[in-house]
Amino acid sequence: MSQEYKEKIGIAESHDLVQTDSKWEQRKGQDTDTYWYDEVDESGTVVAKYVVIDSTSIYPPFERSISYEKVG
Image 1: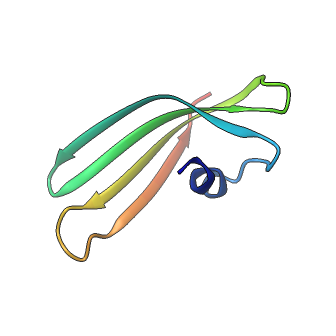
Image 2: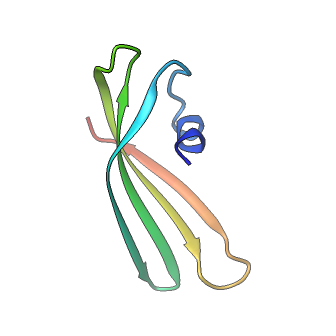
């Protein structure tokens, strides 16, 4: 999943996303996963932090949306 998020955020191919936390919530017809990621460079140094929200409708047609925010 983090490859998909890397592409969405647009981080360098040589960098990685390291998940640091997650939360799941279901309400108002949405199944929402929230992930916290550190972007690390080739040497393992944290260069940015992101919160990614991946939400899917629990009703047809099961639309999905992914948003993110840079928080550090």
